Image (cartoon, rainbow over all chains, first blue to last red; front, side, top):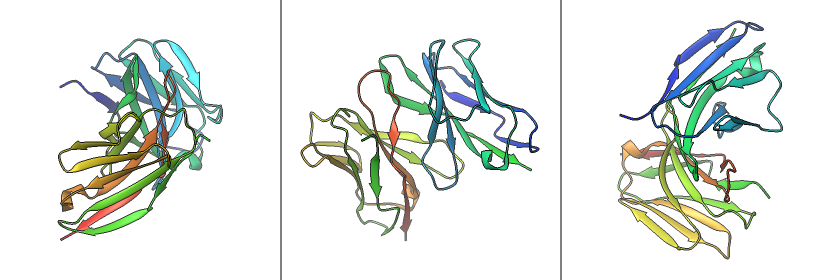
Length: 113
Length: 112
């Protein structure tokens, strides 16, 4: 089945220790998104790629970076995680021209100790 | 202008009843209004969506009602079941490569 895959599902990191979350997709969608979702809140868009064109949200902290080496993969790098970065991180994809129909992965729950 | 206001924050409905969740928006440029369903520990899943050229869209037990003049849209879940217990998010966007704007979510509990 075509899908959006996130690894790992659960990640524990230490305060200040860099961490990378990964997302892959078999949908061959042009657009990939990273969202942060804290408990009982809506997903908050961090950035998105339209093909290789990177779009950063204005209020995304500099601590968060992203890489998209090819169509299928996208990575979220948190350079120096703080306690406030503990959250669910969601990857989503959509087709060019139908960017509103987003397909979400299952998420990675990040714990910062 | 970019906000989507969603209510109620939480909702408890008896099995077999109708669940109604409401959203309101300000930006008249919005032209796509989806609803997402999210179960605990899972990513949101697209449930149903509507565009402003229709006033209602139905898929099974799920119906979106859209009121363009009032800038409001709502999700109705008929014959609500315990398996419908989840968090529901409304969202909106406008044409182009603009991202979705999400409401704050409604936690629905359907009790037997």
